[in-house]
Length: 479
Image (cartoon, rainbow, N blue to C red):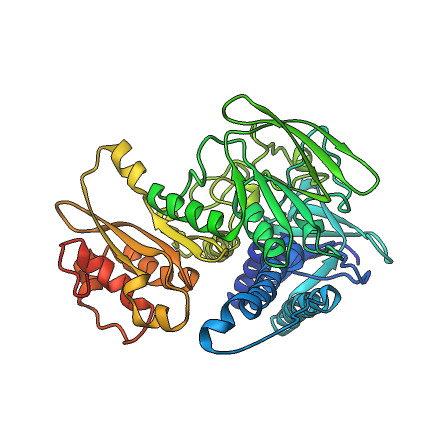
């Protein structure tokens, strides 16, 4: 491709990048998107980490493993008899890949529909020129090097798994999230370093399929980012399921054998332990992905943590250069990246969008699911803000009982004087869907009374949200 000019060039086609490209195209701009991802079938695809080795495939495996556990352990409650239940790992992985292929193919269709040019390869910022910024695209498969000029640049290169020294990830014996999504057999013993979202979700998948799972977490508290009451309930539920979670752990030497991994660690009481496992998953967070991006060529640099500094509208210090998603401050969440992608496209169009980062929901897709938005009890106490809590259990909800999943609760935290909702925390069935009502309420500065006065369908799980809101004023109807 000769040096072609585009109004907007997006580097990276994950959830933030591809959504930014689509919104910019909707607004009438000429748009190109640079992406280099090559899937296991040696095909170049869109969607980035989230669609290929993150959110989408992990949810597919979580669903498969939930079905397996349901058949083996919970159908008898319904009067359904089963015997000799087996799992076909190859078929499970084939189903997962089919879902991924459908989703990534869908983005390719949307690019064609919106007349977005896909620049296949690795994008590097080369220089600022009269027309904007020069971006060179190097092929990762067949093809020739290309050079384009972008009047506006959106950097959306995402993040990669953080690896630890002394734990070489080969995605066979020691895996990050990518390898842990593709085990060809169920390990008898599985070790997980890190009790965050990825560690808990992947640990849950393989535990349901028969692995004995031990989780080692360096932080002294379990799920410190969540509301303390939710974290306590989650720890209780995961222990009951068989996840062995150890907090306050210091991991020492890790050795690999022919077909096993040995982890030496010290527990929170200072006692030394040795753990032998068949596979080890390392899930200790993610780091911004800026390798070979050429930031220095145009006068940009990352901060001490590797993030690209931006303002509230994702502008870098350079005119018409933006950065979104996992490469900038804020939570590393796909939906946060998507919202920032839309915001930047609209800023380029001269509109005045905004994002309230306090209203971005968090979700952990374990069983029970965990979701929250806004402030936790411990954050409000630290701020010295007076609040009123309301809480209601799924155990008193007919729909949850009928579905055989009545663990957990909804908690609503409201301002003691104004009744404005400050935070909502859910642990229970379909928490990922229920939290959306709370997000809408908080975006519109609703009071807990507002949710309490809205008619909710009966029987439904959403009634638990209403009852928790009513409980703020201690007038829950079924408590």
